[in-house]
Amino acid sequence: MDNTTRDKNKAEKSLETARGDVAAAKRELGQAQQDKQDRDIELRELLDSRSSKDAVAAAGRVEGLRREVAALTRQHDDAKVRLHREQEAVDTASTKAAAARRTASDAERRVAMASSAQPGFVM
Image 1: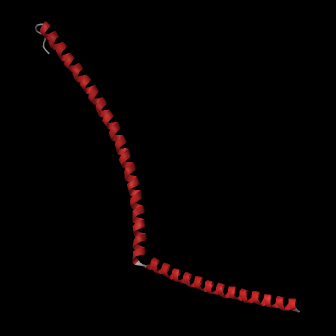
Image 2: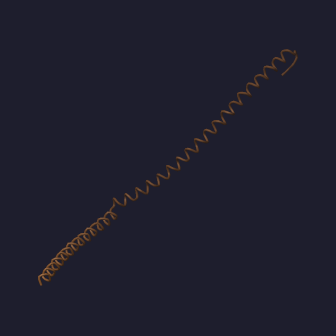
Image 3: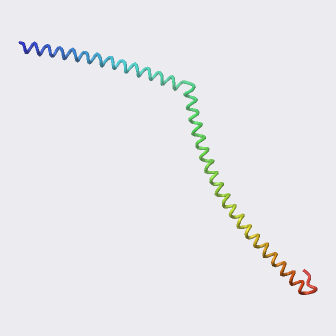
């Protein structure tokens, strides 16, 4: 009987401990549910707030500006490449024009020399 009483007391104590653990778990669950509801309400209020809507609009504007800047950067880079290519063409044309002027000047000198060497030669 002694063992039976001891086992019964032990089982009752375990049951009491388990009931206490269940009660603590229920309180913790209730608190967690309340905290979740509070956070849900805060989230809804934040999402519905003017500042949140302004932030979403600003983020969209930032993304649009980012795309626009990227497009303008590509356009700028393309313009720099074209400018370099056109500058090279101008340099080449200037070199050819200078050579043509020298050739024309040399030809005029030769004609002038030839005309002064031949009396009656008219240009």
